[in-house]
Length: 211
Length: 188
Image (cartoon, rainbow over all chains, first blue to last red; front, top):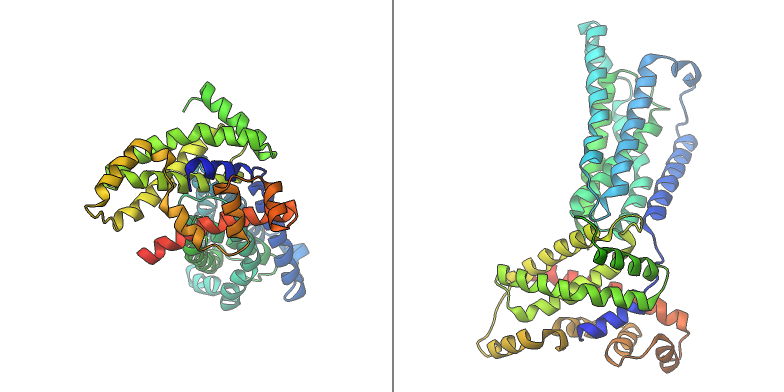
């Protein structure tokens, strides 16, 4: 095939039917709706939420996970577009990290040392590490599907970012159920769950997002 | 990168193309190709790949620019988008070609000739990939690319609707890109 012929052929396929922005937005909204429905249909919101949300620890948990969701989703929306600088967006991930560190530091100085272990282990650690990844599946599938038509310079990194963003969304949803409120619990188990989902995203991305 | 007049022009064509203007798109691709070719030849040198492969690389890069054009935000300058996508694909494509370079001495003449008129040579890669497409995709690609038929003509010939031909063409282009990629992993 001559290059000129190729160009003529490509010209016949000129209109763009799929746009990345709306696809990512659809993946985000669809993923949140499915995972929220899953949460409500199975374990539900903790019944003392109305009063619990006024306590500093619960508020911290919700705001921190939400911050991770927002910053990581911001990166997902940029990473598939060649030529767009990622530095500031990537640095914004340090905000939720700093929040976790500050939360842990505050907790350690507030509660007595012999309660640290109980606070860290919480009541539902295993379930948390299981259910956050479950809640992240729908957004992860959506993001990977949308990024498939994008062009992430590094497919593995693209997948990892999709994983981190879905874990952030899942954590922000799970926080409404989670009965364990210590920042120590959050820093340990939420982080473990998010790491697992990020690794899964990277693994899938390294193959599925190649272009 | 400052956006030059040339870039403005390219961006304008691409904006029209996204809305479905085939002529503007043809202008865009034709304008970009000489730059791609120059880059591909320079990189071929750098990676020690024979210059005859440069045109294969150009075609592969064009295909990717085409399939990924939805990732360009029309509100942004086109230069950074284009150069990033081209650089990534160029390096990707050449790196993997570089792994299995094998130039029999008889091919040296062909290589030299290719230097002269690379733009007009039938390239082997695309031809090879074409063989592996399924019908009706292969027929459609042949009809449009090699025989130079339009969508309507192709639709009449294959007794399909124009819409079906358009859809099949788009799928065929995606399959071609996937074939290039799978070819790579088999070679590794």
